[in-house]
Amino acid sequence: MLQSLETKLNEMLVTKAPYQLPEGFRKWLGTYAWVFALIGAVFGAISIFPLLALAGLGTVIGSATGQANLVLFVWVSILILIGYTVLLAVATPKLKRMEKAGWNLIFYSNLFFLTYDLFNWLRFVNFSSFFGLLWNLAWAVVGFYIIFQVRSQFMPKKANKKKTDSKA
Image 1: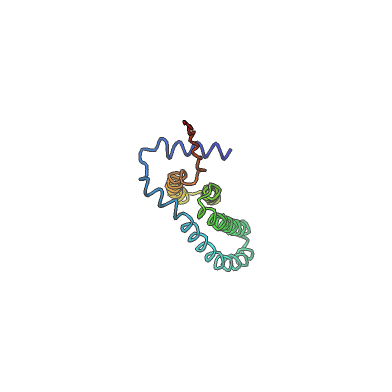
Image 2: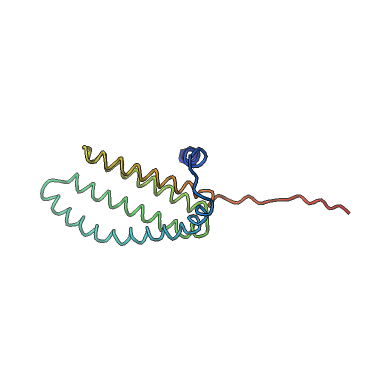
């Protein structure tokens, strides 16, 4: 299923896209994608610890005020952030080696975060959360566009086997 989604998104965001990023810029993004993933993983890891402290405080207050479902949502959100951060951290060395597996992890992390956005919207269905969802969907499209534009940098290189004629 993910393979067919990847194929469809590649068709929409690369093959049929009205604008292609310049080849040099795509190559640069592909070469330094590991740096961006590392920065995301570091910021994600740094943000987890204060969020855990706030979640602990919120759990006490939420439990005392009967907001158990909100407390559950906070902890699920933190687990999703941890998962997203771990995916970025695991992808970093693979991206540095220009492996397709690293690109796949970035693709999965974007799908993971998009799932969280939908989960968040379903939790707080109201007028403002709808526009928050639209904003997040717009940024998801931008993110998917960029990662699919650099996807070719991470595809396995086909060996050029030239047949040589040995004429005497």
